[in-house]
Amino acid sequence: MAQGLQVPFEHELVIVRPGPRSGYRFIIAIHSSRAAQPPGRAAGGCRLARYVDPLDGLYDALRLSQGMSRKAAIAGTRTGGAKCVIAAPADESLWPLTGERRKDVLRDLAELVDELDGRYLTGPDVGTTAADMQWVYRLTPYAAGFAGGGTTDGTAVGVHACISTAAEHVFGRRDLAGLRVTIVGLGGVGERLARHLVHAGAELTVTDIDLERQALATEIGAQWIDADGAQRHDCDILAPCALGATLTAEEVRGMTCRLVVGAANNQLASDDVADVLTEQGITWVPDFVANAGGLLYAVSIARDHLSEPDSLAVVRRLGDTAGEVLRRAERERTSTLQSAIRIADQRLDLAD
Image (cartoon, rainbow, N blue to C red):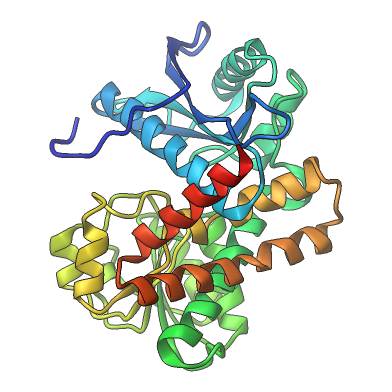
């Protein structure tokens, strides 16, 4: 496990067990359900990834579930915060998983989720898809995120809304035309965000560790760069949309952008990097604000029974939340992370 990382552990429930069919380690961490309606329930996506050290999977589950609690509070979904991590061995040869092997993993997931009897509502995350959740839903009612494009569209729309609001704060205009944006990670959310930004007139640079994604760059007229060093590429706005913990103090000191807004979870390698961003004059919209659109969209569709257009309208209000975070940080002369945490904690207290 990586040394020096801040590991939260104030969780209501943590389950770690091997899947009887897949043999993978399944970790469900329920951080907080105190603000949930109905009470005692929490929601969060399911991440399927390979880990050299199984403890890294546990660390991910603990930190991601904490982020979900903050995300739910600041977005006002009243869902509580949880996360599932399915930790596959780093030397797994059959990757990505397909066919019966993947179904075995999903059966194991459905069985564990169903045993919790609604205490944990799962959904897609890195390594899992809306189609996976549709399949899991056949075996347990406690799966969501597969209607109308799943959480991917909601997340991308929410990030775009936060970029527009933050651009007004930093550059004095919401119009993104001509602003140079670098997207790191062209998965489902990164691709959709890229298309939104091209439509908005941004000058786009993109990258991904999957070199086949270069075809998307060609299609949308974006510049492709190598993934190595991409966060330090000369640009106005950086959008991290891959895995987390990539913003280290050293990395931030080498960055040229003025604004960071992306879809990746846990973008900071440690919380003190938020202060380094402030010192460097880089405005950061905390990830649990910017990427809350997927959760908002899923809740609006599945629980509140809103239409897809109305659900996306709810998601776009995340821009207002981002603006509140940035104004408070400026007023109180603190980092945007501390500003967002204070707002989330206040909303949790009001929900008690």
